[in-house]
Image (cartoon, rainbow, N blue to C red):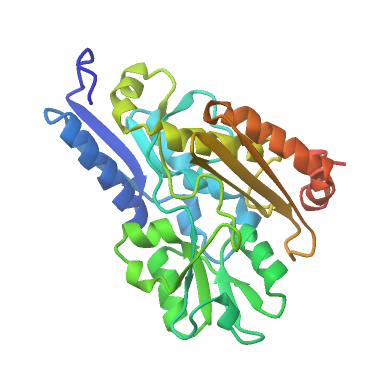
Length: 319
């Protein structure tokens, strides 16, 4: 329910990337806000980010997922937009000074999806089949379980990735189920990968709404869109990743879910080739998710995750 003590502004501008999926996300938030505050004019400012422009290199080599965020934050800073809508798995682990994550929406399906025109699941792929993914997290898990497959980079928006599959460049590709479902492309999902097969990315399936830290008015307006159960889970995942310096350079996954009042958190760190994979699991109260994430990260380090990290990001002082 909207907060009756707060007077909504006459206008709210939402900053968004211009990809079809990002615009779907922005339009979804606009619709929710229009229902809550019908007197407010809500518009979308579409922007092209550096992450959208550089498609011939992997994200891990050009600066990570933060490349999708910086231009949107600049629009917030200079007043061209009031809020920005992000996929939480694209959000850097540390929100920059001067900004805040005002709301986290209820999670869509957090799982990865196997997409193929010829094969029913990963197990059905013949030796040397080419599987496309943009993620070191997915790549490491694929290589660990299916060392006989070829894993090759796959960049571009959802439609571009599907086109490359349809052109025969790949036998199969792995995408986030949430994006396919939001774009009404569920029929392209050949099989859903459970967390045991492919542990999801931090925040996968959830949307985050960012605004300037000095906009307490906006933060209050956005509270009806905030889903506390999802937030507990995402905060736990992000806390684990933050301790480990999580970025596109690190094959890392974390996934939390609340079952019967308990938060169940799983996490892993691996080499890109999947030959060494360290995992850990914790259970606790949902409201302790952030400290659980930190504790799980320390458990991974105790098992040797710091050695993997020292090889992958030597400049971050893991040795």
